Image (cartoon, rainbow over all chains, first blue to last red; front, side):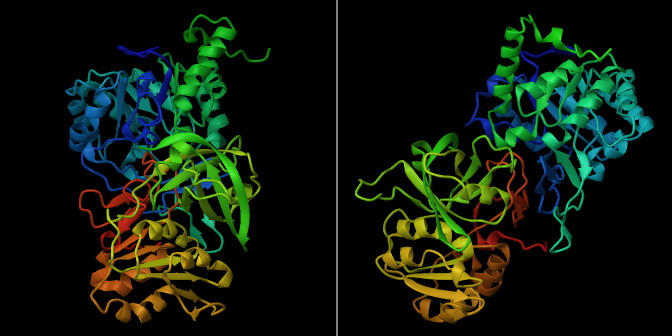
Length: 300
Length: 274
């Protein structure tokens, strides 16, 4: 599996925001076995995040409104990256800005950091206005932003798409035209929950993002729509809890997948999925996972 | 260093009203647990609820019938309040549960038995982490334990604390047992007498409104208090940043209850309206 110039040893990555900075998982799994680690999203300056409560469980899913709390570029490079850089896996940095200038500035700075293998630009966080959703839900602003970031970095560039749009394939097409090496989808769905006793929202931010098994069928449909429209690799995610889920995403066109919410519940999920995909390939005598991409056949 | 391991249910009994005691055999995690720390629990094979749930250490290395003390065992005490705890009540001897632990920073315990006096204040199921703390403090005298709840069936662990020769004070909001009022009011009415020889450490555990009331009552002396906080958690091991509480730390105002906590110095907390 390659994204631009980046080669992955397997198609399983861990999704930004669900894997901390990698170190939180070192007691549970061998991190070297992962295809790539995407740490928590980074902004130019530190962000304190949203007021609690920040998390609430709904049927088959989780609402969160963390609000992109992060230590900012400098602290990340100084305090968090050294641990990640020692691992025998790729570090793909997820980043976002409050303005186009901030996106460009971050892309330029990360371009100079040799420990980083690639970038995932977040144009889709539903929890803060500055999380990029304002850019990612509009074709023209997506176009301008991806073009500007593309010019600022030679690193493999993934654009992370929001599902909170009418035509996700149109936004994906624009990302491709503007030079993205891959698209990743989907981020969380804007959602909310109310406590009927207090009559208050369950989240401090009122609105949050829904993830988990509840969104898998919608995410799968979106990956398929995007696969029919673009030629760059697609990284699929949304409620992947086991190898079978991952294989579904690959069959509809994903070249790689990300594990998100499942990491929080079973920190070993990503390694279980890697093993499960390998067993499926062996059992079905498929020589390489590449042969599985988009193999989905519509009913005649 | 936390780890993920399978635990076996030894016993699961209804103590009183909605409160249950779950005894677990899990040597790797039992050996790591300190007072104030917790485990994240999931019933094997169950997808609903989706997330694990956090439970504080209640007792560990307890004796069973005529057996020797068993070092691989620990227990939690839980209240049946939702879907997850409802399912937990159905667990029986031999059932498997999946655990992550030991998690969080527990209470600070002086390395040698202390002759200093201390007050322990627990509200409802919040009393749970204070029992192993009381045992670890190993005080010959001067342990004052304040136990509070809405009504008498919410007053837990009375007999356990009696065995430790502690001074016990009970408050219920409806007056059905002990002092009528909150456990904070009761503590304040005894504070002067308890602190005659100077202020003593306070250890507290309970719901947010109780801890907020205690912080207000202690005023500038709230930094003498270590408090264990409850929060909704995503992962329990610091990855998701879902369980934060606001603190006076200028660099990272929102800190994780699961990682930097669940025990915080009460003087570090900034109270936000929820």
